[in-house]
Image (cartoon, rainbow, N blue to C red; front, side):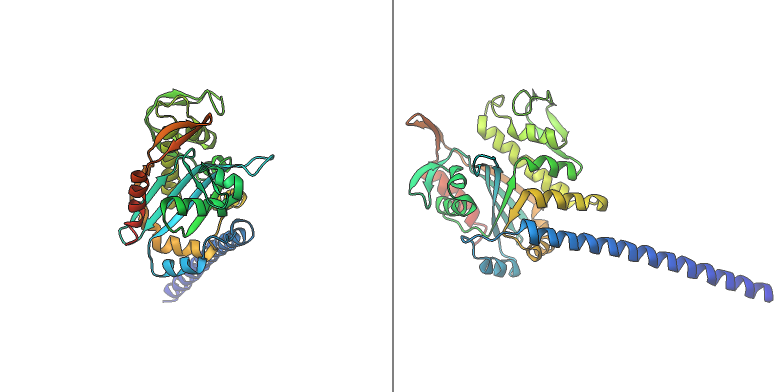
Length: 313
């Protein structure tokens, strides 16, 4: 009996030790996650979040609360030391939680339209150079007759760091080619599914002249990369790299989303990536006073308007 009592005491002692270790591990993980949460919140509040006059976020917050469709302007910007840069990539991302769908529409940067606030027609990507995010928002809303709820502006050079922070991405490449353009590092892009690191991704989205579809082909690759980043980000499970990802976003991304908006979108809109579609606006190239423009017809503008607004109704 005494021997059994001693064994019971030893068993209880080990159970207590195991329980203590378990609690310590859980508290350590919880503490680490809390630090990540705080770091993310601080980064967004201090470096990422920036309101604009052209979007009423009180209206947007009501849409998020009601889980209505949201339209997000994505601006990929070439930032330069000599000027404010131009929007190299211009897209409208629509998130529809009712149908668990996501739609990405590319607007070619050479599209000729009215630059709202400038009183002239010019290439749509010049709106950013003339008046920053506000003028870009006004111009896109006027061009497509839509309402934008958020904007996300990203420094295109930061795309490389973002992809590396995610551990690389996978895309389906439709052309077999070697990089001899933007980076000139001799990367070979084989046809089919390929893995890309950061610098390789930059070459992939920059290539233009080796593609028979020119800028249309390039914007298609940009949409592929965005989808790949969304997919990788949604399945991103490397806790040890989250702070690296937060740092990259803090250094390269600006948006009118608050941290609470981001957490709401993650909770209520993350399933929209289940059904992803993309489209690029079509038009005809022409030269006016020696400058190349893409003329987009009224029928095409109406078509894209209906694609976006249709999901809102």
